Amino acid sequence: MDSLKKKKTINPIAIVFLAILGVFAILQLFNKPLEGKPVAKKIEAPREVLAILENSCFNCHSNQQNLSWYDKIVPISWAVNKDVKRAREVLNFSEWNYSAGENQGKMYAILNMMQSGKMPLHNYTLLHPSAKITTKDVETIKKYTLSLSSVAPAKKELKNIHQNIESQENNRTSKFPVSPNGVKYTDDYKSWKVISMSTLFDNSIRVIYGNDIAVKAIETEDFHPWPNGSVVVKSVWKQEKLSDGEVRAGEFINAQFMVKDSKKYTDTEGWGFAKFSGKDLHPTGKTASFAKESCIACHRQLAEKTGYLFDVPMKVNTERLIKNLQK
Amino acid sequence: MKKILFIILSICAIFTACKIDEPDKDLKRIVFDPGNLKFISTSLNTTKETSSALYGNQEALQSLQNETHHPKPNSELKLVTWKYHANPQYIGGTITGELLSVETIKTDKTGKIFYQIQNSSETENFQSNKEERIKYIMGYKPVVRP
Image: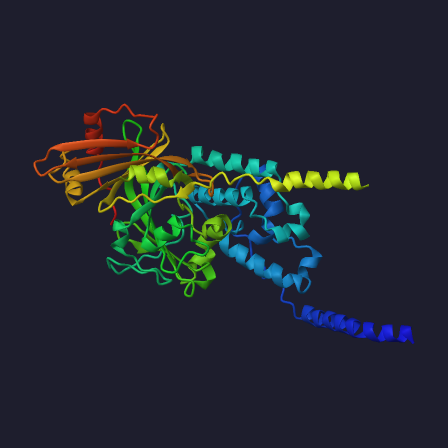
């Protein structure tokens, strides 16, 4: 009698389990394999660097997938296909049509992702432990990336990730251009407070301004998340060296905007990205979703602690000091 | 047995009871308030690892645009200098950190120049030559922002 009861209680679970298995088996029959793409132009790098990239990154960030059998099984395959698609959009080692400067910017982004432990993704290395990178691997990537600075061509050709995204020439000569995602250029930032100053790859000098909402958020450390209406603008210039070695802001490169609107920019952590380059301030991006494929990848992984915004002032000063100095 | 348990609990207590005060308790993220002055220019000193922002009023801006190296009457300028660091969030970049000094130049309506420097640390007193510093600050060119 007892055993009979037991059987009855087990049965439904087993049935549900078998049913799920059955559903997955059927779905497996209709499972669309990952879209194959040819290798257009593979990244060129020293052998030891390529070996690391091929082992730890290529499975998602290239057209040369070498997936395990279990990656092709539903429901794992759904997650894998989604990840690969997104990964290829952001960085694809098989479509490496970049100039020396762009290559340098990309390598710095890769180095930063690896060093911070953000890439390869943790849930990927759980299933693919051989893809884990060691500190020695990071050192190899770092050594190569730093070597790019010295061999990089004249400063004029040097670009970074914020300078290389394909730009769309804006035929309108409007003083206030609009980015494809709706972020409008405004001159207002010229009278905002400077929140920080930075440099990148020894070739650009940057000043970052914040509107009142952003400044208040910084001062009260209230940026998880940043309040809607926060706007941060970064002016970027080429570095110009004076005879005494001091560096000044030379030719204007671009003005980069980040506008917080959590309802409008749901794909990019609530931030609307825009970049207006050159004298005509032509906006970057061909479609409204351009930032989803470029900007947000780094901001999401490396600047999460500061609400996806880089260059938030460091927490290194005392209030007493600033009060004394601002007298 | 009780003794062992007591010892174990005591050891645990040692590790849990003392909580070191957060080292950054008094530290803040600050944004310099230039009052009614506006940002005009910036510089980087890679030897001293400092970065400066120059602010000024309309008269100061005009003085620098004219490259006369002399402030017009009623000018006000502030050169704010920060120590910079390797960017903790991005290898390959630097970012401003500690505020080091604020230098102020003011002229009255007759054009008489006043200069003042405030340092963040009282012990570290810049032996700055007033005339030199005025000449240096008045040598800045406004940045280009289309």
